Figure 1 (cartoon, rainbow, N blue to C red):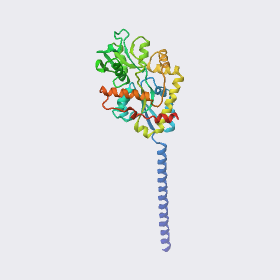
Figure 2 (cartoon, one colour; figure 1 turned 30 degrees about the vertical axis):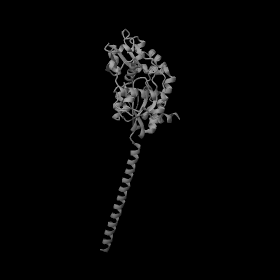
Figure 3 (cartoon, helix red, strand yellow; figure 1 turned 90 degrees about the vertical axis):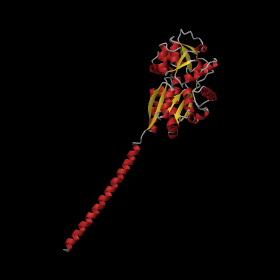
Length: 340
């Protein structure tokens, strides 16, 4: 009987030891699982999405997309590019407000109107001071010979763009105002169609339309070579994105500069890429590219003064509602980091 009690006690002790072993095993397995999950979490860290908007057809963003250089450089930063394309700046501002655009380029009109409205972006580089960037086109056989002849005429352009600012400035130099013309708001593609079909007396636009239409004798310019009318273009970045991902931004700028340098030393291939994109003859595009100067730099005093003058004129004519100190939205530190 005593032996039976001892045997029973031994069974109880053995069972208890087994429970402890199982408990320890479960605890260890749980710990390993937690460690594994944590490790997986690091390995599967969500990629940084970089929303880059191409504005227009003749710029380094087109080359960056074509060459895949951003995708190549962003791999080391666990980042990926999400490309979008726009024909002008105002729609980009809408997407930027909705956090669908992080980095892009804008002409003077969109930059000024967006900054005046308090949209959350910084100007991070100057791309061009904008001499001979815009033009006013008329049909070859039009009786309009001068800007003065635009009074009472239908002028098409995309409101809020660099062409809009240019028209305002050109009219002022001839003693006219925007109220002296019938302004038709058309995005570039719609403007091209309306001009070709004779629905417009004049069209405010930029290249490749200027060069393509004048070289093929489908238009002539009544204003283009006014070198004192500047239209600076800018690289911009959404403020929250700039603050959260500074390494991505500097990598983007380095890649942009790489594209600029490549374009300036490979003009023929650049022209071929652009010509294929906009479907105009390669020889026309070659002549256009040969006359362009592709740059990226910090904002200069000359460009700042041009932007401030434009902002003041837009305010005077009611196209922006708040006075803008343009320099307050410019941050040259980004491009200066790349230049070092």
